[in-house]
Image (cartoon, rainbow, N blue to C red):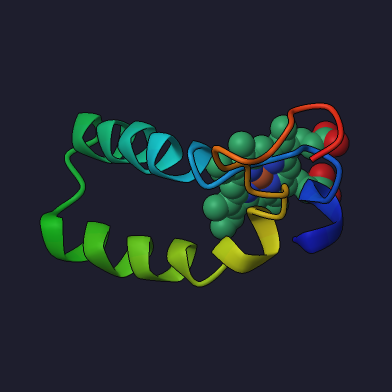
Length: 65
Ligand code: HEM
């Protein structure tokens, strides 16, 4: 999982967007809330391997951090 996402620059901001999209897919397919929560927990456990881009803050420069 870490290798597959390592060079994708996925940030903290991307994560909740993915969660919203995933939830909309689960809703569309009528996945029950309990199962959704279970899946979200499993997905959440992978976050540290996926969100690996350096975090920007107000003192960071986009090009040189
Ligand atoms: C913000 C969240 C995520 C983004 C933006 C993202 C994006 C991507 C992208 C673009 C690829 C294709 C990489 C390539 O072809 O080189 C990929 C591959 C993959 N992602 Fe994600 N991903 C996210 C979260 C997740 C999560 C939560 C899981 C599973 C729990 C997951 C599982 C996978 C798998 C299994 C692959 C394929 C790896 C392979 O081909 O060997 N991803 N992801």
